[in-house]
Length: 249
Ligand SMILES: Nc1ncnc2c1ncn2[C@@H]1O[C@H](COP(=O)(O)OP(=O)(O)OP(=O)(O)O)[C@@H](O)[C@H]1O
Ligand SMILES: [Mg+2]
Picture (cartoon, rainbow, N blue to C red):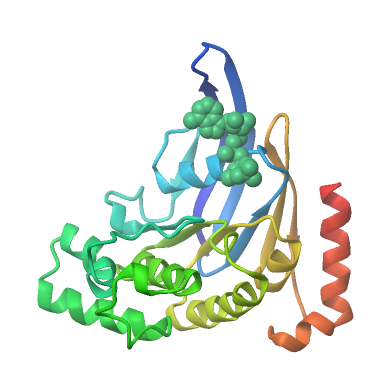
């Protein structure tokens, strides 16, 4: 079932020198409940802009978003994960994850319980009382994912969440993300520069092109085997890598 539909969304930014940048030309996209959709495309093609419009952080210049149950009325409908985990350095990991719940009026006791539940889910059950600086980059990013999921948002938007991690950690985080997604059944829109990551994780991949930014094609990524390490040696996976790579050229 469709969760949200973007219809003819455009975005024009006015630059500081007074010029105009058309970041998105009319772009339409239907996002299905529970799907994992990736956006890939060259730098500057409008991926982050599209994600920020979906999140409600910025308004489109034209077009509209049509939500299944009406537009999100509070931040709690949307979870956002950025490339660099934004954690408050003076708060424990548990308090960082509980932070949005405080803002939405959940009691501290219930908030702590839900924060710890979520930390367990992302494999940080023993690190609730640690400070962000005591964790590795991958662990901090897991904490940021826990925080984005803790209020059970209708949609989770991720902007290159693993871009700053080394390749091994990134592979591990990809598997973690697939597992977490299965457990919480979230709808995820995921921006990445990595074709491998997109082909490995996604139910669908939208390829965007620049000048003006728009969605060029959307691919349904289907495999006959389960997603997991072994998929990476599977010819079907290599087929998708090659299709996506050619299209990005
Ligand atoms: N706040 C802004 N003010 C002016 N121009 C902007 C603003 N945000 C984005 N742009 C412009 O809009 C275009 C799209 O930017 P966007 O950040 O969405 O690209 P992107 O696909 O996410 O790129 P990258 O892969 O490098 O992150 C770019 O030309 C950029 O310069
Ligand atoms: Mg970006």
